[in-house]
Length: 228
Length: 253
Image (cartoon, rainbow over the protein chains, first blue to last red):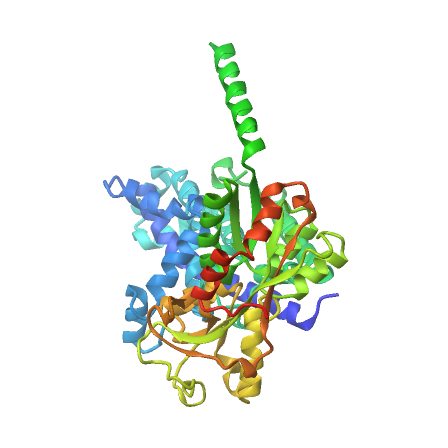
C-alpha cells in the first residue's frame, strides 16, 4: 500500500503542478496571444526559445538552473538581492524549473487556438466599441476555451511527470522537493519494488485518465492538440 | 552499390571480431566515488594487457537493481561489502570472487577556502543553510555521514538543513556550484597526491563511522571474458594500488 511518505510526495507533486500551471497560464496567455498576432522579426526567436525544452534533455536545463540559481549565478544573485536567499533545494526553485520545463505545453496549444480566431470577430467587437482588453475577455477567451483546457491539462500533467530537472536542483527534501517521480526512482534503487509498483501504478492510472478525458471528451480543433 | 557497402560492412565486422579474440573489452559498473581512480586504473590496464574496460559510473544501489534485472555489466566495483554479497546470494555474481579493493574515507568539504575548520567544528557552530550528502538508503557514504552526525549528536539539529543527492558525485556537484555551503563527500573526489585540491575540508576520523569497505565482484556475465577476470587481477597489482592510495583510500588489511 501507499505509505504516508508516498502520499506526501503525491500531494507535493500536485501542489507544484497546480502552482506552476497557474503561473504558466498567466505568463503563457499574453505571450501566446502576441505570438499569434505579431509579424515582428523576433517571433521566430521567441518561438524557438519557448519550444527549447521540448528537445533539450532535462539535464541541460537542470544543470544551467543549478549553476544560475547558486550564490554566484544571475538568478541566485537576484534572489539574494531580493532577500529570499537562493532557490535551489526549495519548493519555489522547483516551481521555477517546472515553469520553464513545461512552458511549451501551455504556449503552443494556446497559440494555435488564438491563431484560428479570425480578424472579423475582433473587428466586429471593435465596431461595437469593445476595447481590445474587453474583446479579449468576451470574444477571444470563450472561442479559445478548448485551447485553454488543453494547455492547462498538458502543463499540469507534464509537470507531474517531471524528473530530470528535479533530480538536479531538488535535493530530495521531504514535503519540499521530494516529488513522486523521485520517490519512485529511489524505491526502485533501494529494491523496494512493491512500493515502487504502487506509486508508479497510481501515476500511470492518473495520467491515462486525464489524457483519455482530454482526447475523448473535449471537442476541439486538431490544431489545439499539437500532440494528438 | 548496395552490395558493395554490404560487403564492406561484413569485412568491417569480421575485422572487429578478429580483434576481439586478441583484445577483449569488459563492461564495469563503478561506484561514483571511485570514478577518478578507476579511470586511471583502466588506462593502465589497457596499456599493460591490451584489453580494455568500459566504465559506467553511478550509485551502487542503482547498479544492483540493474544487474538483478539483466544489466550487461561484467564487474561491479561497489561502495560497500553488502551489495556484492547480496548479488552472490541471489545468484548474479560469482561466489568467492569478492574482495575489498579500497577502504573509503569520508570528508566534510566546502568549495570555499577556509570555510571548514580542521576539526569540523563548523558543523555545530556554523551558520550554513544547506548540508549536502548522498541518500543514506542508496549510498554507503551517505549512510556513513548520518552515522557521524549521530555520533556528534547533531542529527536532530541539522536534519532540516540536509539536502540529499542520488549519488556521491551529485553531492559534490551541489557543493562545488555553491548551492550547498558544505557537505559530506568521498575523500577521493576532492583529494589528489596527498592534499585537498580546492576549498576546505575536514577528514572525518575513522572512529566516527563504520569503515567504508568497498568490495569488487565478478558478475555472471563476465565469467567467460578474459578482460573481466584479468581486470580483477590487475586491480590488486602494485600500479593499481598506487593509484588507489594516491586518491586518499586506505588499502584492505
